[in-house]
Amino acid sequence: MHESAVADRAAMAAGGGSGGFIAGRWRGDGGGSSRTPRRAYVTGMAIALSAIAMFFIAMVSAAVVRRGAPSGDWQPLRASGALWQVLLLNTIALVASSLTLAHSRSRARSGDAAEFRRWWLVTSALGLFFLAGQLFAWRQLVDAGLYLATNPSSSFFYLVTAAHGVHLAGGIAALLIVAFRPARRIAQTTAIEVTSMYWHAMDVIWICLFLFLWFGVRA
Image (cartoon, rainbow, N blue to C red; front, side, top):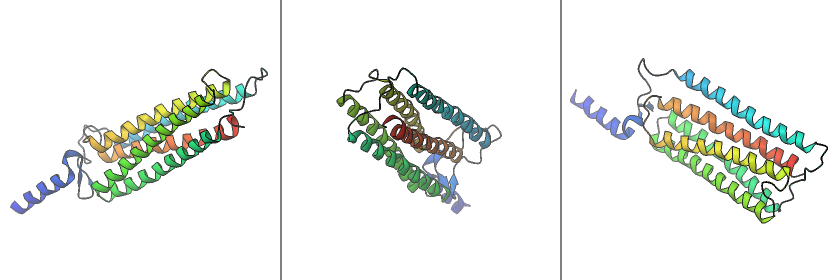
């Protein structure tokens, strides 16, 4: 009995408190009767992501209509080649962040808390790199004399990248909360799953936006 108590204390210490791993799963995942079922969070996130996707689809649709307007004031975004190189690098960083996130989740399923957190934080760092890169892309536009009100294409570029950046910043905040805050009302595995859903969705949305910027705004 004494040996069992010692083992339990060691497991708690290795798990890092109420948010850590014990026997290959997160502490607190068992939950009580008052805990909201996992499927409720997953469904809620799916609905939220559907709304976000519709928001960006509406923005792109408005840009397509504006581009074909008879006024003819839509001008291709004639910025330096550095702008598109930056956007391409940002896209690669965001895709890489989805890969590191997937690896982090696999480490979580294996019960490796240290590796989970390491790769989870790498994902966060890549997200911050992406945001910094977007600010640098804006700087390239400013240097080229392209501002929010210069023409409809530059307006769309600023607005759509800002909207996506705000959503991605929310994802980074969620990543950091999951990494450092012990789970309370939601099981840690559920928090990992719904945060991963959100992050991968932001990745897919950006790839679609990047392709539209490349072929629909740049051209």
